[in-house]
Length: 114
Image (cartoon, rainbow, N blue to C red; front, side):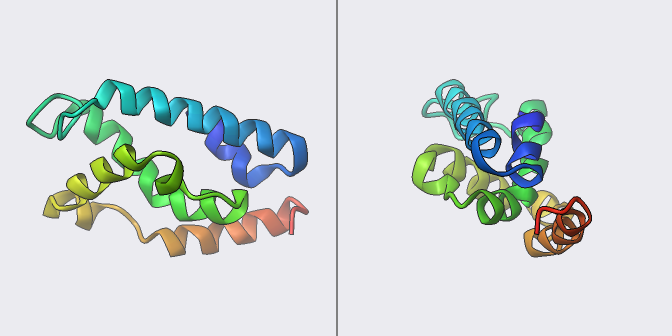
């Protein structure tokens, strides 16, 4: 998951398109594992949720650089994100997605992508 996500903001053209496709394949697999459960472990927030939710703070960057919308492609995954964010400890722990994007914009400039 990490490599495909990183490539959505560190590449352009065909390589970026391939990364987006791979990213959505991963998310759809995760949606399948989630099923109709509120969390990956069932009714309770657990280790898998804890491991995956930090990626969400990067979604604004991925969507902006990759020109796509995660919710349109993977609504069950975003519904899971929203449930996780209802937990005060999760909401307070994640950095603001727009601040992550500001950091990435500098990185993209340094990489010659902007």
